[in-house]
Length: 68
Image (spheres, rainbow, N blue to C red):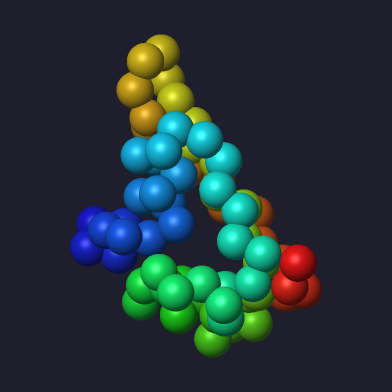
């Protein structure tokens, strides 16, 4: 759960809309989670909030090794 705090996943859930980071290297709000996927070669990320009825239940993450 601590990996969730401040991450792109938390921002997508709290903002209630899809979140796109075009290049993780340039994201000043990068957390340990984003650093870990950046180390695996991920540069671009899209996170969607999934809901069940009226509350968030999970997120869906799509990544790419290409920035932009």
